[in-house]
Image (cartoon, rainbow, N blue to C red; front, side, top):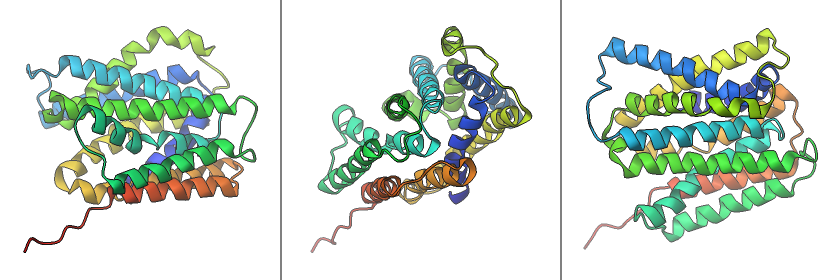
Length: 285
């Protein structure tokens, strides 16, 4: 889990680098297509059934569309804002899942989880109030796009939890997201400018590393872990992703990291810990 969260935090740096060489929407489309091929080959090798009729087609298409637009917003947003700020915005996802689960799935918010929500949103507000880490006048649009991406990520999770996708194999669920996102984003590529920018080996390598390692490998590994270990134990590592993202942005991209950014990270991390902390109940009698 430490390796996975480090990879996901580092992914924001990879996005920033690949954006220097390629149109952001094209980058999302390309990495989804490459990863889709690799996951499909993995399924063929493991003989994982993919085409049986199980009622997942329409939920899968919806999840794939949400997944595609989520990453389109992340890649576009990181054209305007820093990787550190974008990481914190995107990783507000667990709290949107909590709110959506309360209203859509009947999963009631306890006082403990409400306290975690309050801490996290205080962190989000602190990011917006920080002027020292703002890279330019349009950074607010990048922040808002990354925040919206976190909401779409949460919506994807709710679709998976609330439909027959919850009973489908992890690989099939991931393939829905990769295949549909690669198809649905094609008409939007011209809206983000020329397909090629300043293409370099570093930008190309960054895009390929996202497709092969981040998407095709770590996502499947994550699903494998979820099937074998308690969800409560895995979720306790969630705060490490924004922490690693902020640190990678500062160390590898030399992004300015103000005290407010670290304060926001502390608040969001504390919120994640509070939300995922198991409730202790006394024994009856």
